[in-house]
Amino acid sequence: MFEPVLTTQTQVEHAWRELMGPWSFGGHSVWMMLVVDDRPLPHLTEISEAEDPPDAAHVDGLTEILLGLERDVAPGLRVAFLRSRPGKGVITDNDRAWARSLYAAARRAGVPCEVVHLATRGAVRPIPADVVGIR
Image (tube, rainbow, N blue to C red):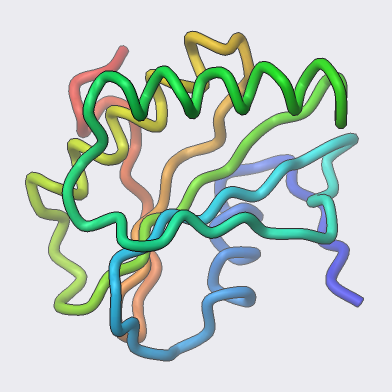
């Protein structure tokens, strides 16, 4: 059973590596992991067909989802996001735009957000908030 303790960014990155494996990705997705009491809940949520960064309405929708999850499912949760896509592990403008939107939705919902990660063929790497212009 997969039940790591997630108290540091390194532990979150290792969890994503374990979950995403060394595989390639045929499409663009965003994955959401909820963390309660420093342990991930046993369910990942995938947002598929996530090539283009979300517009304001989609960020609003994600904010509402996070608010509902925190209120109704797992009070006190933290959220971890990972963007997966085909191609090389270089962080692109679209990756940065996705990360910026994910950080923004979590911030607006008042939900602590772990460092957003990017998964590409054989690689998982962090996209820290300061890389996307968030302080």
